[in-house]
Amino acid sequence: MDVQTSRSFARPRPPAVRVVWAVLFLLLAAFAVVEAIKHGWPALVGAVLFFALPDLTLMMGTRRRRERARPAPRAVPYYNALHRAWVPLVLLVVCTVMPWFWAPVFAALLGWLAHIALDRAAGYGLRSADGSLRALRGRPAVGFEEPGGITWVLAALW
Image 1 (tube, rainbow, N blue to C red):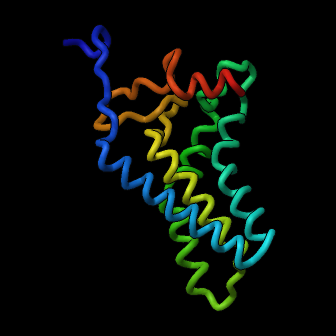
Image 2: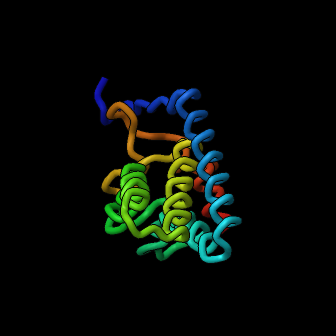
Image 3: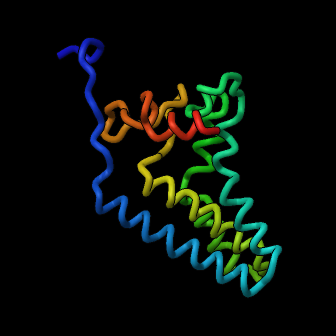
């Protein structure tokens, strides 16, 4: 079959992988809450701000309400950079081994990593150059950005 005439659908991530991401999200969120309780409002503000930060790139360059489900092509590199799990993970390791340690930074990094874990548990991943969800195994990702998909519904509510 010709790729242009037939549409192949990407299988969603296996449920076990999504459950692992969901458990990781719960652990990271609980750890961020413990840090916020121990270290006060600066840690809480850092965790909440960095939890929301990665999705602010979805609003870059959008003009119409319907486009908010998909980042503009110029925003995709920023979106992908903020949604790679290794970035906050490496910064967390650096934060813990450095002689200076400030708890709000640690809590903020936990919030950032919790956001990524929640996205992966919900089935979101990195984006392709046009802003659509990147496919698994080289096939187009389908479901979240079609009318009625969860991203489309959330964008309509926005």
